[in-house]
Length: 112
Image: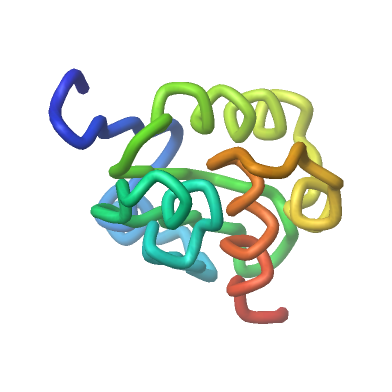
């Protein structure tokens, strides 16, 4: 969505998962915890990820904040490849980018 700050989403929302009876684990991260956002003083927003409760696939992702459109493409690619969320969590992502925050976000997903 073209808003200020930008909003981007892919996959299931928390409400979609509940309606479909899909159990999920949720990770969240405020944008003020992302180093790139701190460096530019664009700290408004958050990231949220839904991961399967019975597996490790990413089922949904939402980001409200600067660079949302760029970051959602990375998560969408991981989802299409059916990667376990740990692969993206442990990836070395270029510093100083908003996508670097994905490691921190996915580190906040509760264990199975």
